[in-house]
Length: 284
Image (cartoon, rainbow, N blue to C red; front, side, top):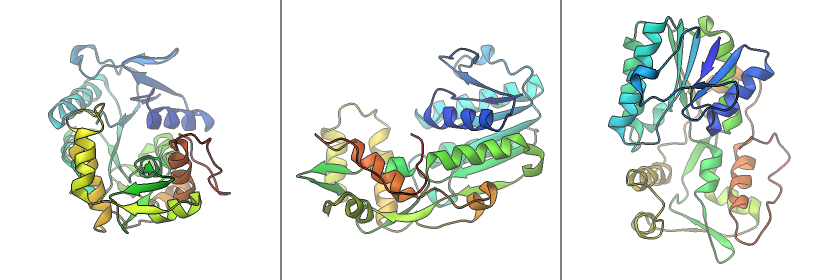
């Protein structure tokens, strides 16, 4: 049986759905499980039960400070070794993202995965096209960002979920491999053009000010993470592509621009969502 952690999250739920679509025997694990899922709380180390799981799809529990994330991942990997899991797949961060504010927890977890004594596969996921579009800020019927003219090799979440399902369905074939799963480069101006609005670049200092002062719902670790994404895109560190995703899927990737446009249009004040293009849509 395949178990997908974080199964109520966006990537976890999409991965579980993709596995079911392939006819795989799979279930989800979550701190707040839905019907048919296992309760899986990484902070409750003694309660992590992976008995009967052959393949563990470890979706990064990255929504926290690094020390907490790494403790969580170490706990579930310890349980995987104890309970007889035969293969671990970890969703990490693209190799181009080593400078990003959330890279350390991913790289530390990769070390843990390689050292856990189990066959493993690491999926270094590119940044979501949904995230790229969602980070654009609406102002005066246009969009603003700190991305400048930089491009992101964005990838639709649906493609990452399908790739994870392909590998989880036949993990032995991918044992010991690290894949870099990125899409095709898109720019904020491309999204704005598709939306039919202007794009204005703001400085990184102004962006950081907005993150700190104008977005009170952000958790303390989030502003530096978001600022690192902005400067990484702006200065050309995240536009590299890899054939790995296309090779795994056996088809072209979904159009990340269409996905980013849909995400940006969904946040447009006073407007309903616009059509995001004619290519394959990504699921949210």
